[in-house]
Image 1 (cartoon, rainbow, N blue to C red):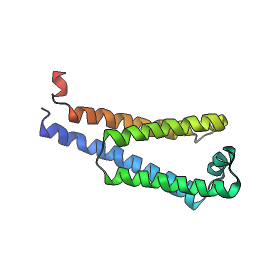
Image 2 (cartoon, rainbow, N blue to C red):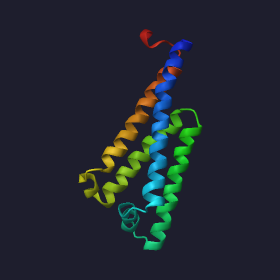
Image 3 (tube, rainbow, N blue to C red):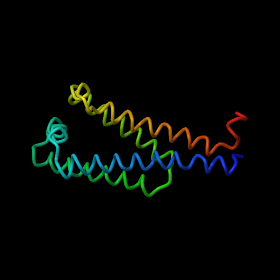
Length: 141
């Protein structure tokens, strides 16, 4: 069984990952989608065939959903489910952008940078959770 000290040692990096992802999700939902209604964000909805008023409403709704996911990351303890969902969301959003407007990936602050980093944080969290849940110390494996 893992020592209590090792489990305690893993908690700060897991919490840092969780807080970082929460801040990113909340920011991405609030700032470009709700507060400032960024044209690039709106364009993604328009490219899906929605008229402008519906696209704007869907953009704001997606922003609220992103903020809710960020709040879940703030309120819940680190889990495989949350981090698995984060990785799936990052992959899904990346694939959506590739399908709709692949040129976004050539811009300076592109989806690859943000989505890749957020998925990598969750991959690290999953590795730490695996260690924390392991019945044997890592040195014995």
